[in-house]
Image 1 (tube, one colour):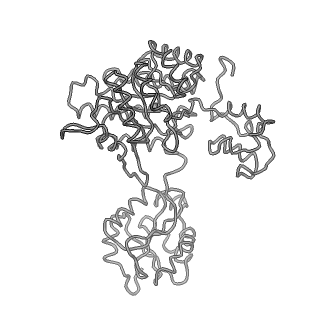
Image 2 (image 1 turned 90 degrees about the horizontal axis):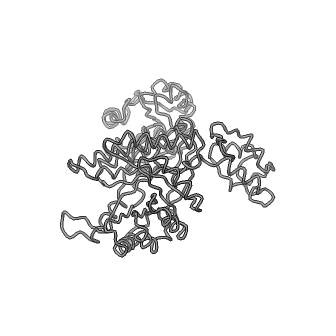
Image 3 (image 1 turned 180 degrees about the vertical axis):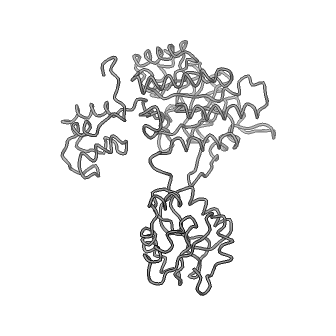
Amino acid sequence: MSEGEVKKSVTELSPIEVYMLLPRTNCKECGEENCMAFAVKLVNREATLDKCTELQKEEYRESRSKLEELLAPAVKEITIGVGSRAVKVGGKLVMYRHEFTYHNPTPIAIDVTDEMPLKGVYSSEEGLLERIKKIEGFTYNYIGRDLRLDMIAVRSTSNDPATFKSAVENVLKATEMPLILCTFDPNVMEAGLVVAHERRPLIYAATKDNWREMAELALMYKCPLAVFAPNDLKLLRSLSKTLLEYGVEDLLLDPGTFAGRGLSDTINNFTMIRRSACKGGDELLGFPLIGTPITAWINSEGSKEDAAWKEAYVAAMLIARYADLLIMHSLEGWVQLPVLVWRFNVYTDPRKPVSVEPGLRVFGEPDESSPLLLTTNYALTYFTVESDIKKAGVDCYLTVVDTEGISVESAVAGRYLTAEKIAEAIKESGIEKKINHKYLIIPGLAARLSGETEEELGDEWRVIVGPKDSSGIPGFLKENWPPGEGEG
């Protein structure tokens, strides 16, 4: 790409442009019916070039190279770690979420230091192994998804190579989570890399004072390198250019995180960098961004709770404003849960509501006379219903209808939930072999479908209109199940 030329954004990219560079053999090896369908999938980032076996042949090398450039994201995707626990950062195609789905949710790294004792001796003292275990075990189930922490940042507070090496060795033995090695001293960094380089940790960080030594380490040990230039975008861009010319290709940029009065500068810097990459096509700034909300703990004059609260809101703001990786300190649930839930929501495809698999669910130990209920496959609706049923200890069957992830009331209004779909779901579930009655309880918000559903089901099926809110299911069943003569 020539200097001054702005890379075409994903929203401007036409499938025809991609199609013309494909082999156009319609061989179906990629799993699609033809090359045009595959081109559409490539533009929508629902498929990758390696799926096209023809394109891997030597005769298509030039076309493959052009496609790689055409489809390359504005923000380079970089892998930290190895194997199944590796994380991918960056890979952003657009600046704003409404333009296109965000990929690669921001990983959160929690810090440990090389001066922590291996095991805590006193009740107030936290040991290295104990903290790692807490990081590994931190999980929260949110509408059917397990939200977790992703990485460990090993900070050298001793500035001693031997101490740092020992700490890194202990971390490697205790966890397979991806690592960030944090020190500005190249000698200390190399001591850690000697034992950890096979795990491909992130080197944090190169500065204007140590960039050459850190670049040598990144090249020698083949690890990604963070570039740190606090509140100086001109220097950050200059260091990026210098390191690229030196041969280091996998870079992450840290423009500095100021949790106090400098917070507005922090948000502005992150925004300007991402705008330059996505809107201006600046390849020198087209790298993942590192946010460090952990700085809220530096020189904190308030209580620990104040520092943790500040860390939490800075983290949330940086997730919304383009941070591709965060380094944090607090493990408190009230700090991490809002951040994790916010991350989940920001990185959910806005075109595809969060849904669960449709089908028949069994709760408790139902028998042939147990009630049969119905709901949609919108995740929030389903897990609310599931929670209320389990909390009440109800033995029942629940048919989950595929409404493309739409809630009950909206699905009825939009014709995503219809009598025909309900009848089809009931028949496909095989429930008629499990129960000796023909009563179906539908949500109160779908009441207007009751008559049509009875007609579609036929064979003496009766539809009972249940409560509008699933919290009313236990009381409703207590009063209305089993149904009496003539009820329905």
